[in-house]
Image 1 (cartoon, rainbow, N blue to C red):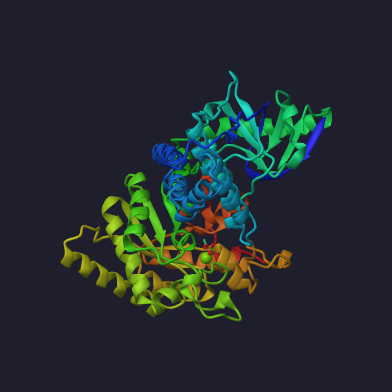
Image 2 (tube, helix red, strand yellow):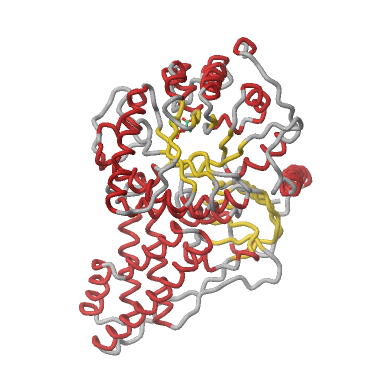
Length: 551
Ligand code: PEP
Ligand code: MG
């Protein structure tokens, strides 16, 4: 048996034969230059061909894995035309009198080395993109078509490192899993593997040798373990996990299309939490009934400057339209505390979790808020969008949010821009203050959603980022559950619905309690939808009083 340990970057256990990725080895021909002008012409031709290929790949990526994946190829296209990279190729042609192939090789190596030497992990990961771009131009110069999978049966694809374009061009029906020598959880290949739901392990290093091709392996994308021809004990452990996973899949598939209803007829709305438009694919494939939390901050965190109204509108509209009339709760910007965005140039704070974060930033910076609200209202014309404000503590904050919404609606009316006038407005219950004034807050909005991650943090005075608080950070604490009950009663008294969108919503051991408290909605990660539905359908909804939520 050979046992290898890497970094699990996309969950799941699979078994299958290892297949080493056949990459056409394009090595620059060190032949005589055909003359500066001719080599320049060849280089331009290969770059143009590369641009065409990348544009086709971007279209394919958009179709199969969403806009974010398509962006990879758009970025590659930008690299092909990058002024510095092109200058470097031209300089090699002119100064070294070499072939176009050699010029591409020199420029590619120089740029990749420069990126790899940077301190920033993200920039380091871009070195693989530059190599990918250089290889593409080189292949086009040499008329080489890159490899695929020459196997009848599905395989575990092994490689030194897979470039994003390579990953995307592969025939997914033939791939059980990915294992690579290099790469990181940050790399685009890992991101793509997760998007496609294919187990993946990276960072296996030199132990992953081409000689292992053809041998039977088990991989566990959660633990990062690879076992080749495992001994009996290891095999039993892998097999048990694999079988459990298969059984669960079959069982969970039977839950698709079923109602989220208890044995005694209580309905629960089971929605999903997402972080970007691409996650909608997983929502739909797991039969999520709506989106209970779209963390809009991904747009801000991923950008190097404030995202424009149109950029935001496009993202929100994409999600709203894809959900085809199912509710999509989009939370306004929730940065600050652990989510810092440089271009916001926030003051340094002693206690950022208690500082200017979330709605406080929006209320302090009306222009930032206005831009997002305009994008949200414009998107509301394309689906059932609901807007949710995070980190509320006071009634006046909600009134101010509503005034900002009114202003934006008046603007859109004036401009003749379509939007839904009845767009639901809700708030997150994440602070003890919001629980204590829940009755007053409930009169102002259409729904509550409890952010148990923050509610636990603020109720128990436990930093959610700290990893040494152990048993002190206890989301099952009666104080948290009673807070939930108080907010639920207040919501129902005002005739509005209440959900949970914090991690606790997926805690099956608390489902009975949530039902008894009277929670109407649970918003969980897409992969938790079907297990939750299975549990709801086995449950009976009791009721409970505050005192019953005991210490
Ligand atoms: C929460 O606090 O529970 C929540 C859902 O918001 P976030 O985790 O994004 O702060
Ligand atoms: Mg929160």
